[in-house]
Amino acid sequence: MRRALFALLCPLLLSACSAELAVDTPPQTAVIPVTSALRPVYVEVAVDMPAETQDLSVNVKQITADLTVFNPSRAFVLRSSARLSLMGTATPSQPVVYSDNNPPPYYATAEELLPQRDFPPNSRTPVNVNSPTLARAIGKARIWIIVSNTVVQTQAIGDPLPLELRLEDIVLHALVEKPFDGLEGALGPSGL
Image (cartoon, rainbow, N blue to C red; front, side, top):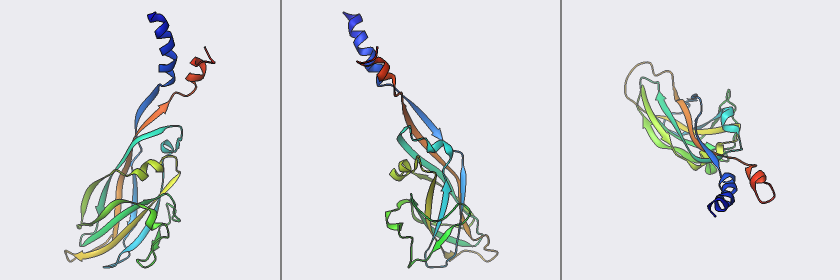
């Protein structure tokens, strides 16, 4: 009786099998130029996704991103926020700048990644992002980050350059599940 029960359960258990994997992408960096003082300006930068994230045959269970926001200026406090979009016009080598009166048309649908905050001169700020839009980025060849970036205060006299914000060591951490498709065909009712 036990053998018969085990023989009936075995195909069911094997057809429901899957493997769970933790995957980290290689670190990437994006440089955001600062082109405004006191009024926000939007800079759209394109980030090409690593080939490892473009496999659509996995189920994404969880995804987060870690990065460091670096303000290399020795004099200026930079106010910044960031949104993630799955559409855009920038390329990795050519950011697109928008004025505060004319943000990108898809700005309202882009999901907030980094709420507005100030970054002091010569500071590195670690940031962890947990956004549902990151899961939708899996399978895409490119994503766009729209950064609002402006100088809000001077804290020192001296060389303010470089006037940019750097998003350094951007690493996506994904927990993915890979189903073993096909086993149910061999072990299912019409198979063995």
